[in-house]
Length: 230
Image 1 (cartoon, rainbow, N blue to C red):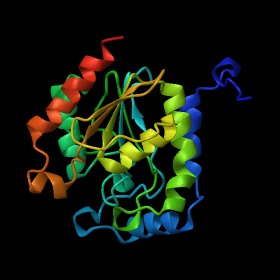
Image 2 (tube, rainbow, N blue to C red):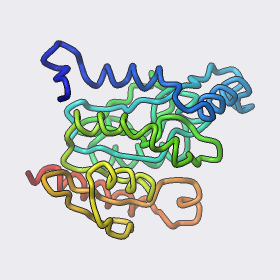
Image 3 (cartoon, rainbow, N blue to C red):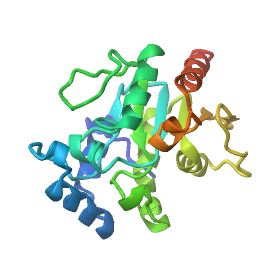
């Protein structure tokens, strides 16, 4: 039987954050994050990189969870906050700002004043992986963190950024068979949230126009609608 940490005076999200940051379960990921933090990108050579696992961020009372793949090597692995300091985050937070879920359209550092309202942003894998491709073993090792996160937050809507985020969400909620992924596809979990799919705001998708800003806006407009329906 699980322990109710709240009843013991423990903040479950604060405990989860501490556990995520301290994790060293995947040697390849630990080594990569630390290597990137030591070598740095030339544009950020004067900055101190975070170089550790990245916890989720946002409103603890969020009805909407945004679920991505993993931190970027020179984005969140540098700044210490998920989706902060990279091109994908630029797109994401502009869309969330337009949807009324963020107080500003930019996210460049942990002390830039960004605040999320009714939204929480996280990743299925908490460490930046080489080539942005975690192994199956690494994904499975990180799954308990996501399970704890979603159980504590109990969202009404999970916005799944890309197929990896969608697979992680459907695995957590036991969706079988898993419907086909597609932009703006929706899956209603029995006695659970609605999963809303979106193409990931990666440069590969945004540069090729596979994902446009109006397309991403439509995802968050729908998420806000669904979050307010119950």
